[in-house]
Length: 202
Image (cartoon, rainbow, N blue to C red; front, side, top):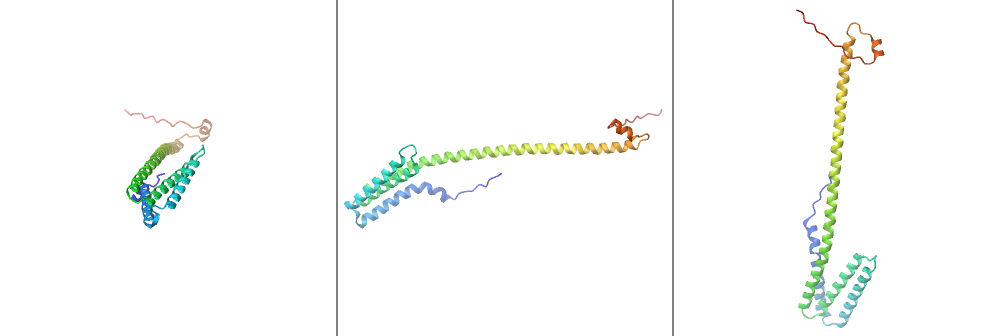
């Protein structure tokens, strides 16, 4: 009945919290490396990143449109679009101020979106824990009721055995009395135990 409680490692708990910052920082670093290797003021590279970012945003818009829109695909596409835009600016710009500004904005947006998912996940986890506790309480109540019922049955069986033993002893003692007639006992059913009268001698 008792389910094992598994303690998660602190790295497993911290990884989702730092993932947005790690992702945007990685894009910024790669963009600046690309900048140092010839992407600065390269119109062709900038146009390529604009086309890719626009295509990813369009894919996200199509994925989220309609009643059957897939939020996971849409979120991934929009994240890719933002990452491509950040990489394009980081690679094209000659200074670090604009890329850092966009990095701060992208990180804030990423944490804002992640916080919404974390709240939903936390709410679902709490609901699951609540249902688990309720099921455990129900099972524990059923077990207690069954234990009480079994104890009562055992007690009744003990009393019955004690009564049967006492009855057998009484019948044995009655059979030893003078004038005992087994045929009359069979015809009359279970007789009452004889009463013993005591007389005081004066």
